[in-house]
Length: 498
Image 1: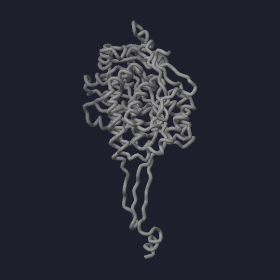
Image 2: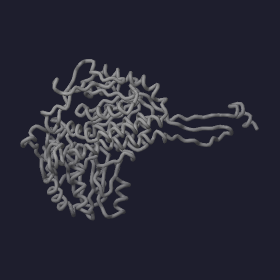
Image 3: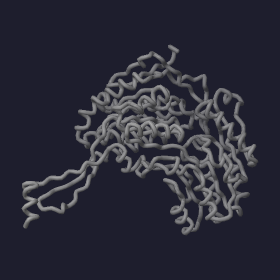
Image 4: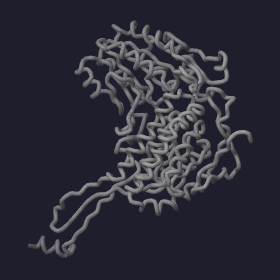
């Protein structure tokens, strides 16, 4: 282990090991012989130290003028831009997705920093006229304190940026617990903030596992806000714990995203969107296209074309030229994919393509699976209802737009959806009736931009949004201010008497 780089928690402006001395290895999912580094396996005592540091730093940070806070965020984004290629390579090694995608992940963090830096000059409140004479009133945003952030492994820099940048611009301090599978990318992000000059204690990172580090962060009484992105099961547990202390909580959880294909759709356009939406990031996106709901009159041709295109996908180590799809994140996630392939077969769906783990040559050292397509899927099958988080897509035939929308909405989740059609009326009906937080027209279910709100309905979230200016509502609360400059109550009583 001494031959591998050792990383530490960043607490109160210092890089320190876990108090217990425990560590764990971070390995490349494309080649498990490649050890990325050794990271602290932290516990409740490390979380307590980080929260204490953040709480102390909050007293000064909240008083830094918001435009000055924005300047630090802007500088951090410039540093991320300078280090983009290095950080993308690190991310591909630890997460597996191909370089083109990890570059995009870093770019999202850059964009969020620039966007939130500008909000330092636009943390708008509201002024309104009073119903009484000689009285002024307005509302302003105020920060909340220490924010606890728990982030997933699939977008290990973009999603931390969605949480850290808005929290900081509002005047809060943060403690982030990154996913145990991808700590390095979040460490790189925090390093950029440190190098930009963010004061000690304002940003703290503690690595470790959910039960031993994540749960103590959620339960710590001095943490005022929890923002969690992950599975619906864990998110509901987080919500329950937060409710016991009345904490602010933002949840971004699972998805089972539908792509509706009408009989008038441009199938060339559909083909590109369906393959990228289903198999990009190895299907490990909460916005992945996991259901293709196709009009029965074109479903056979569409299935055949998607099958042919998916056969050409180059699967392998994302650092290599020409690779289009990387591995699952770990053995456990690969096992989930294999389990659902077995379930699909048992349910009677037609296995059109794939269905097997890839073990030839160097692939035997990673967690690779074939791009997999199921055809003639019924809407109530488990593979059409449950999140798989892998390179598996189900094709469901329907007879009308109304049926397609009904099938699309008939799942426990509601994150993203799309429709391919040349009929503008159908497009507007779908935009109105699809019960998801995001709807695309003639595009796949992926590719959100940071200046619009991101989030979902039903089992996907709790109504909060990331991205856009709407995210500021998670990390601030409103204060209404009233100023009576006429002598106060006595003057009001005189006016009323008259």
